[in-house]
Length: 488
Image (cartoon, rainbow, N blue to C red):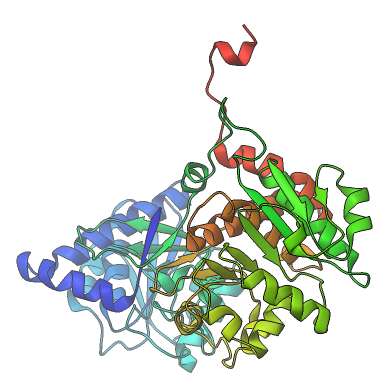
């Protein structure tokens, strides 16, 4: 599990280390790691061309010292200084001693040096930067993006808020980001995720506080998805009840039920108004034509996808949320809960809301640029868990615990995929996993399944349901070998 930290947390962790080590120690550690990653990305050193975009802060110093190390390995390094009168003097001297070339931004030859480089290193702004890039920096970022070389950011892409991922104007389009000490939250969430590219972490010896935001890896998800044991039966793996779909939107019930079945095929009870369609598509489900109370014993509910918002739907939603069972609340149920937030605030059982941005706004606040902060505020206000869908889905609990999903694909932005996510979440929630971890696991599996389904091009929501078992198998990894595998 990867801990995610804000800029303030990183600065606080740097202070005692800066006081306890000789001046420049942290910068040398960072530059050494940065140069090593750049060499791996370049493949070979001698004769390769690297352009450094150098600002006035410590990131500029990191870039210059790394450039000096690269030049010492035979790389042809050119540093472009945004402000020649305000530059890290020791770093600049080291680059010049190693044979690096220096140009001022706007000088003849800058565009050629940047666009023809094999690698462009962005050291213009650091974690303290805010707002969009100024014109000179924005021009250099555009040159780097238009060139053929790899674009690599130092610690955080210039123009990206390190704590929120907000981008206000132009930013450096990194394909790789080499970050120091901790993965900054802004590298994996919001617009920052797209500008950061692949993130490489360099250890510089920081003692960090316990993270309140995390990102799951496949192994973390696998550890939370226990496979059935010899003593399990259909009732012991988590029984999920589904209230989804209607005469107008029967597909929502079919997709949600199918996803729940495919995630943990113990027992799924369907109690919506699209019973005929669900019964035809999934004979494995137990289908009830009556109300949720007639469905039988369940351990968690999924309510909302395609159910409508009329009086009958409101009555059913109130019935589900009046129980003491965990619930996933999605789609139409979110619209109704936004109108009657007391339906959620009054619950003592775990409740997982799964809005996209427009559904989120119905609760009275736009998401804005700080997606983690917004999800935390709504979760705290309602006393529940919020799964805020997006390119990097955020899951936040009322106590401030948060997860940012690292899987997925833009191809998931198509009708019905949210219904699949709800079914996955319901099946996981029924196992007894805490709601915030349920949301993180469900988002991770949903994203991994989307990646599989999109390999050959556009996907449909039904493709996700079909590929779920394969995605879960890949997340768990190869089964252990042994006599039981051979049938002996």
